[in-house]
Image (cartoon, rainbow, N blue to C red; front, side, top):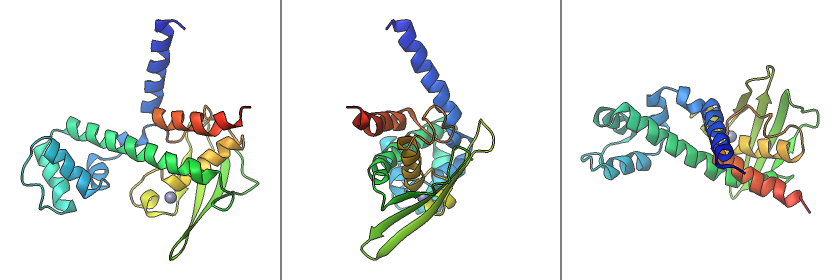
Length: 199
Ligand SMILES: [Zn+2]
């Protein structure tokens, strides 16, 4: 493979990543407010910005907006969101293999996926309904009942688990998926979901 060709693939992956990176369209304040207090404090520590350690979440979000430029905060959010994505994708891939955890309505297809995520906890069950609605060809509306999805606007691990099951079952391909994805998440899926099937 020529170097130019490899470069082209990298560029394409980056463009596609930008296209799929829905978080960058969200207001910066919202993106900051859904980060953990710890990660916001780490940002301050890493830049030697003092007086952040005693602040609570709301004040901390305001504090970093005053003390950092917008670009630094955006890059920080993007990095944290990428970590969120890949960590949750790793969990989701494991869950997706279990029929007890991930159930897909057999009537589901590329235009409409309905899934149920059920995980047994020490104190009961965690149950969420997940939906992917794809009425046009270029965008898919995704939802889950959990707090991470409803309140924080994340493409959560439950949705990821349903997505991975759809891909594993051949409901649609990774190339057809127009919802949230990152290059690292894609690599994890390709390495762990499809490689196993090859004999
Ligand atoms: Zn969820």
